[in-house]
Length: 290
Image (cartoon, rainbow, N blue to C red; front, side, top):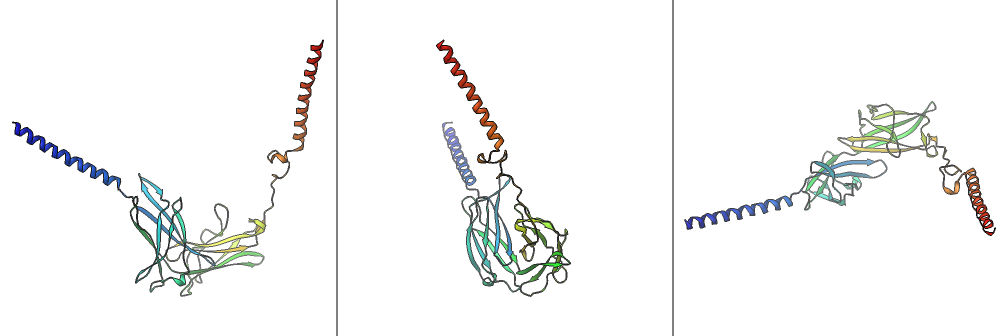
């Protein structure tokens, strides 16, 4: 009986030690759980400006999609032979960053003249490694302001940069730059014709600083060419007249611009109140002397 109790105790002890070790391993594994990073990469080309990657990083944590800030990323030009490093960058506090690409002439496309750029995250203690590639061809978007019969139009032509062939039946947005959201112009569907061209009427009376409008012609998020934007400065807007009365003597102006009637009336009340107080004090002294 004694031996049975001893052996039974040893078995229970070993089982307890085993379960305790498994629990520690499980807890350690949970502590080292790495989340999966999601990379979103868009290619943007500004005519007569920079080409860049618009990058954002997110992750699903506790069943919520959140931005992931301060991730170190490496950008590569993928080729048929090797990956050529273009540079490194780090996402901002909102998990976003714009990485300016070198000139396409210095990058290597494949045999179909398609460029492939990869954004790679090598991983850290909190997140697994991840990568995202974006493929695009080079295109040109020329735009100009023309006048016909005293009416203003934007003429834009979209062509392939390598073959110089027109790109037809592609939707282009015509819009005026604004502080928050751009002002859309033209019809809902502005598709290029067989010559890769559109012609969009510009209405009169659109306000602009000094009468200048910054008009954008944009090919948005195309599967082949990415996003391409051409910007035109057009002096055809309505001059904005400053109707602000902030610098005048109004109730909502600064203290130095207080309306005169308030100054006069307010000072009159103050002087009148102090006059009554002084009069009462003098009378009190007179009564005391009597």
